Image (cartoon, rainbow, N blue to C red; front, side, top):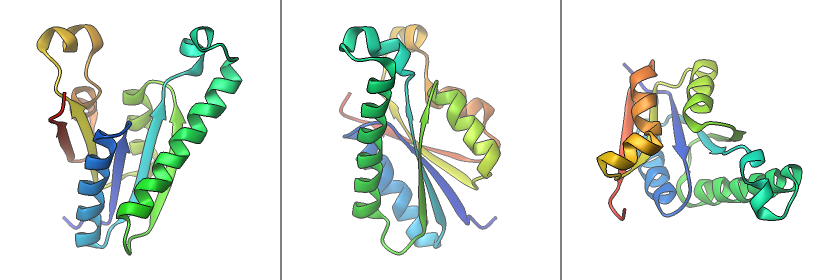
Length: 145
């Protein structure tokens, strides 16, 4: 099965750097197109604590995410074609929806090394995506947690 389109889902540094480096290395080796995705949580959840309106916070988070994605493309894209998307919502839901739309051949994403009780309370985006994905998923573990 030839891989012609890879989706790389990133969160924030330092894990985003590791995930992007691995994903782009695979894409470069396969000469595959890259779709780079970052999902911001809903600004409505954090706006009251931030001192900003939800719209202001969303704009700030989107700008920061766009800068991160551009930095990752600059660092790792080499000769492959890449497209970037900043989404908003629950990461698992948004990534799975994007996968349904774009039909990547493989997804590269990261996971945090959480203790079992943390997974129970917080859930695991990577586990949810692995369970519902229609394509292979490569998971890069965060060894710094």
